[in-house]
Length: 143
Image (cartoon, rainbow, N blue to C red; front, side, top):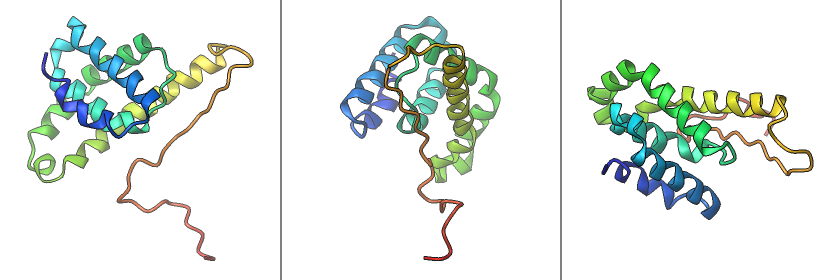
């Protein structure tokens, strides 16, 4: 599958640990027959969300969540990528892909609540504000 090329440019923008994690995800997706249903959509969602996602969810869980997300949203994703809106603004995908970021965070928090992380293990939960073009909603007016 050549669809990994859609995602490769993002890898160079990630730190080495995260780039290794997401590169491994992409390699596994290329070999996964379930990804044949809509590989372009899968890698577009991965490309759009990887910079904002943590890298400590087990890769199999991450891949399962991604494949389920794309399967559940395939009509909406397909409609968008063939629209004028997407051609003029590829960032328009975020209105759909941001739901995947939320889904991954739900899975991570569920794993944490169920003791999926070992005591003493350093865990850093981080959520990025993914839209550079949107002002942060809690601007201090006093400044």
